[in-house]
Amino acid sequence: MSSLIPWQLREAIRSVFEYPGRRKVLKRHVLIDRKSQSDKPSVAFGGVLNDGRPVQGGAVKLLPLRDAFGADERHFDILYAVSSSQPQCAENLFRRCRDQGIRIVWNQNGVGYPAWAEGESERFNVPMRRLRSMADYVVYQSHFCQVSAEHYLGPSEVPSQILYNPVDLVRFAPRTEARGEGLLRILAAGTHGTRDRVISVLEMLSLLKKEGVEAILTIAGKFQWRNGEEDICKEVNRLGVAEAVKRVSRFSQEDAAALYQTHDILVHPKYMDPCPTVVIEAMACGLPVIGSASGGMPELVLDSCGRLVPSPCDWDKRHTPTGEELAVAVTTILPHVASLGIAARKHAEERFAVDRWVEDHRRIFQSLL
Image (tube, rainbow, N blue to C red; front, top):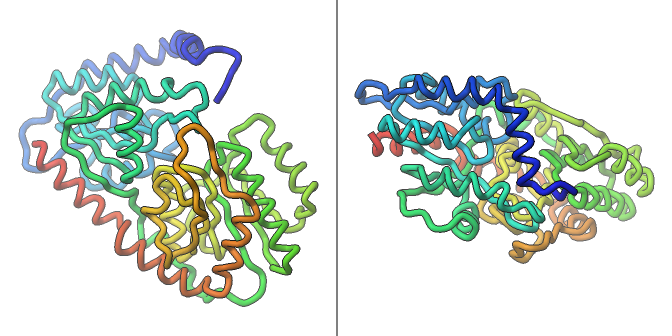
C-alpha cells in the first residue's frame, strides 16, 4: 500500500482526472427520487452492477438481491451499498437518498487496519466512516467485521445484523465422482494482496513433497504487488516445485465452481480475512479448508470442516501461517479429507444458503419501509 506520494495527494490527483466521469454520475443522482409507496421493497445499488466495472469481489453478492428485488436506479425506496464495492460519488448519492426519504442499508466488510493498509488506513476508513454514519441499517459480514468497524470507524447507533456472505448451493456443489487415492490437489484462490501468503503455500508444497505427499498446487487469482508473476516464478524455481504448480492468473465467477470441484483442499492463509467468500464457496463444493485462525475465519470454518492455524489478533503486524504450519495442517487432515468435505458441505447448507440470506434481507428492507 505504501507509496512515495502521500495517499491524500494521490486521491486529489485522481479526483481531477476522474472529474468528467464524476459530473455524469452526479447528474444522474439529481434524477433519483423515492418510489411510490409499495408493500414490496424496490432496491437500488448505486449503479455498481451497470457502471462498466466487472461484477466481482464485493459486488457479486448484489446479484441475488437484484434478482429478488429488481434494480431501478432512479425510482426506489432502499439503497444497498457494500463497503468493498462502493458506488461512484457515494457520499453525494447517500445525501440525495436521505433528502428523498430513501432508506440506506450499508454492508460492512473489513476496514483499513495498519497491518493491511500500512500507513494508509485512513484512506480506506474515512469514506467508510462517513458512509456508515449515513446508513439506516448496517449488515456486518461477520462478528469480526463488526468489531473491527467499531474499533476503526467508531460506534454506530443504527440497527444492525451479522449476515455471513452467501453461496448458491446449486451452482457450488461437490463433484459427482468420489475423490480417488493418490495425487492430492490443493487450491489457493482469491486476490493475493501480499507476497507472504503465496510464499507460505509454496513452502508448504515443498515440505509436503519432501515428506512423500504427492500433491499439486493451483494458485488462482491476481498477484497485487509489483512484478508479482516474475517474483513467484523465481520462488517456484528456487523451491524446486515447478512441475507441481499450476498458475491461473484470473478466473470469473462462472469459472469458480469448476475450479473448486477439480481440487481436494482449499488453503487460504490470508491473515485477518473478514469474511472470505472463496472459503464459503469451497466448503459448498465439499472442500476442507486450511487457513489462519484470525479475522472472520473461526466463525466460518468449524473444526469438522478443516484446520485453522492458531494466530494472534494483531492490528499492527501480519502473522501469516508459515509453510511448515500449513504443511502440518494438511498432513493432519489428509486421512480425513472425504469426511471433512462432507461436513463442509453440510455446514455450507446450514449456514450460508443464498435463499436464506435473501429472505433475511427482505425482513430488513420491510422493517425500514
